[in-house]
Length: 179
Image 1 (cartoon, helix red, strand yellow):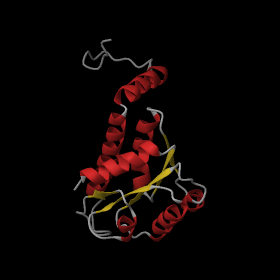
Image 2 (image 1 turned 180 degrees about the horizontal axis):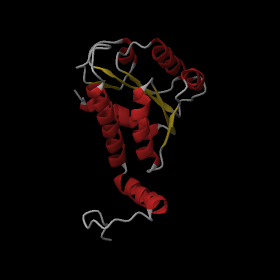
Image 3 (image 1 turned 120 degrees about the horizontal axis):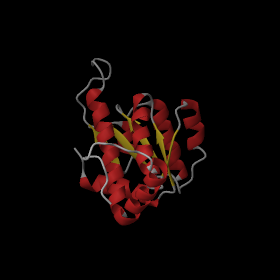
Image 4 (image 1 turned 180 degrees about the vertical axis):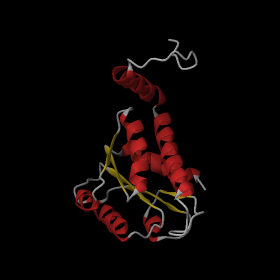
């Protein structure tokens, strides 16, 4: 379900942007926190706004130097679609992460990544499959972005990790770094 050309478009959008903004509702925003942390460790700013009203205001303050990642399982969430329309009007590039198949949001996006569609909207035990798919897609975006400037990103990450996590220790020889 991961299309090479769409992934490359998404990575190019991120590469060209100064800042990334993630808009969604509920659990997807929690999942995006891991993406934010990874990107922060290589010097790329990711902003996640949990307040839905703030999201609608914030999208109006973005410029074409920014980019947005919209996450919507159905691709039909009214306020997400309205924010995507604002992005189009303001020439703010965006990536959409939606369920596979036709929906309004992915028809508006030039870089859509697909969530596995194995769960009904309401008749499911939990969103295991969609959550796993969202995490996977965000990890793929991160790793593809990282690889575009691998040496620079790796050195930056090591530097930040040493400053922030340098005092971490373990007696487990498998976990100990050998410099």
